[in-house]
Length: 312
Ligand code: TXA
Ligand code: MG
Image (cartoon, rainbow, N blue to C red):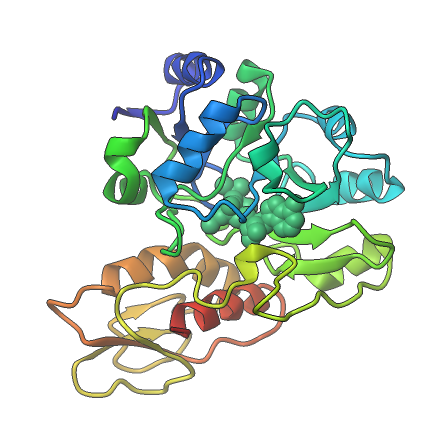
């Protein structure tokens, strides 16, 4: 494994590795992704193996321009409206896959759909432009653990399994993208993220509701215990019990760490995964108590991740 600061040279090297079928971790504005050329089956298999990811869980395909989406997915007028409003950015669109799309079958895990995202992070964009191939990239962590928002997190969880890690510093959003299902007429959010339901509704009208049966999730990432630290997590706490860490928000007293002392949800989202990792230390704590987070705007995505972290 090599860890390199992201610059023109390391991005060119990453591009060569990806075109040759290797796997490279790179920053996006949401979380670090573990990328592979989405057209090469062996490269995609390496991603599933490195993450220990179940083969039924499909990958998001990252693109460098809206025109790439036209090659991968069947025509849908909502694509252009949403792309104009939110791309490049933290929104993944699940669309009907074109029969002719040059994608390794495992990317879609047997579904006839494909999730597509044009990321905003300039390093991710430069990399996609250099590779000129769609890159399948799940979060660069072991399956079922907290997503990485810094290059060090990738080193800790996947270091020896990755050909190259591009270090682009901390991710600005810090929560995985909103996943929006466009495979039926009623668009529905499968995973809440930084682009909120309210924002999407202003562009394409009212959303439907996603099926939420935990046994047959439409988006396998909806499996409840999916972003779990090792220690138990307790939610909506105003104080910690004996031996617990307290993750605060706003004016929480005696917080071990505070997601945002000024009560800013964007700051809290950017800090969430790094702080959960820092507190996930059995030599210091026996559990993590988390202060209540308002459920509006980005708070809905933060609370979604916290509920998953608390489920076991
Ligand atoms: O922000 C993000 O989306 C990050 C960065 C790296 O882009 N990626 C990410 O990937 O979070 P991953 O694999 O950890 O999560 C992808 C989510 C999963 O919940 C998966 O089930 C869902 O997207 N998904 C992917 N393809 C799908 C499809 N065809 N239909 C339904 N859900 C899909
Ligand atoms: Mg993930």
